[in-house]
Length: 266
Image 1: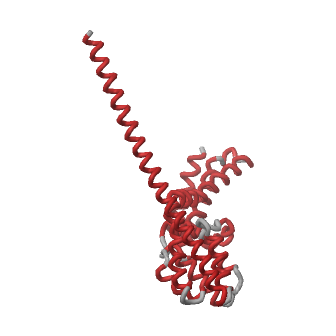
Image 2: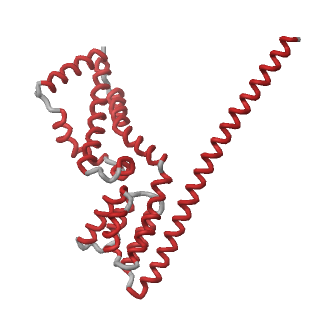
Image 3: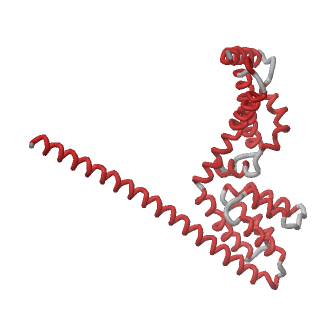
């Protein structure tokens, strides 16, 4: 019975949409602000990690709107399925399934990030190394602004926002921490604090602080290389074990086949 309700509802909605009696796109746009609190803190970062720095705020809003639409449609569909025997449990189940549908794209982004974690994490220390060279000749805010052009694509939007906040006169650590929260890669918080302190230091202490910053960046680079080689070694070991397993299984099958032939002969 519930399936027929869904079919009828879909047909009615299609007719209304086709005749422009209702505008589902406008409805989503109008209701989206009420759901913005559901947007995850690292959602924009994960999108940038997958799609690159060319992603605009409008693109983020559009993709988030699609998630909201999918979640609402799922809730409505399940409510129609249970309409003949609707109660609180079925309504709650419909909402939970709809929320799961809403979270599914985010979970896929998290999975993509984790599968590419090594390459994304390794970008920060190499970027900071190039930034270190600029800081030797410029102040930290100027060096940050000049580094944007050659920075990894994934960091460019966040760097532009960081520089803009500094240019507006925000002299606290907040812009640096906002960048670290937006890009939650390994050691980003610690490095942004060091960068902020480096910008606060006097000219006399700048050399000493820069040396400390340089040593920390070099340590991060070494960690990134070690992680990269470790992952490569693990991949090679897994492939070797798979080859050995396949070879061993093939040898055992040949031996068994030979023994069966000998038994038939006897």
